[in-house]
Amino acid sequence: MRRVVLIDGENLVYGIRTLLADAQGKRAAREIIQAFDFRGLLEELLSDNKPVEILWFGARLQRYDMTDELREKSERYIRNQAKFMNHIQQQKIQFIKVGYLRARELDPCQQCQHASWKLTEKGVDVGLAVRAVVEASEDTELVIVSADTDLLPALQQAKKRGARLIHVGYEYRPIAALSRGADITRTITLPLAQKYVGSA
Image 1 (cartoon, rainbow, N blue to C red):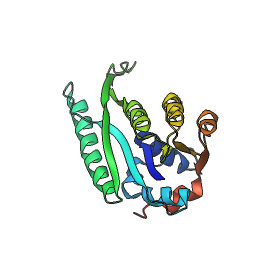
Image 2 (tube, rainbow, N blue to C red):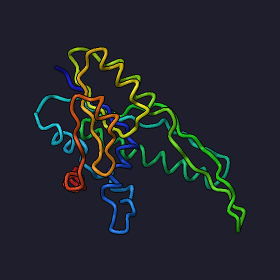
Image 3 (cartoon, rainbow, N blue to C red):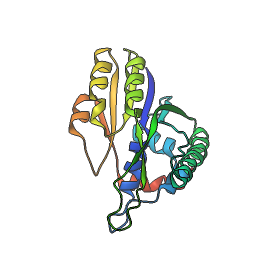
């Protein structure tokens, strides 16, 4: 049986950073992922030495020029993504660009009236969902790394096509609906996350 791991990239990054939060509950700095051993973590979670194809789903990025601040921010995102793609490709993880990064102007500050911009991924979960259904077959095991319940319809369809499902979630936020829909659930715990920080 072939195994394909489908990772909701930002969801996993958020999960790792949340698990590694400090005593005050502040999430770990994003830079921590640039040296994180994702393949090692997943191979330990699955723990059976079965050959595995790992696909990381992330947004297509572009430069936004509405303001100097937004241009600098979007260029920084692009630089960081290029560096991160190199990091995970060294771990034999394929980066799949889907969806896009949406720029949204926030409400102006009450004191200074400065309006900042927020960049948010859109459509990445849809890309992952489509790939899950495409990959699904009776001789395929799909490992879904996400806490996004929007994926449920796609996972149900993958099951109908005969795929075996493993859901990977986080100990701080179990998602019962995803676990119920899977054949097996694996959980990323704090000790496991700590083990693979800076080890890639």
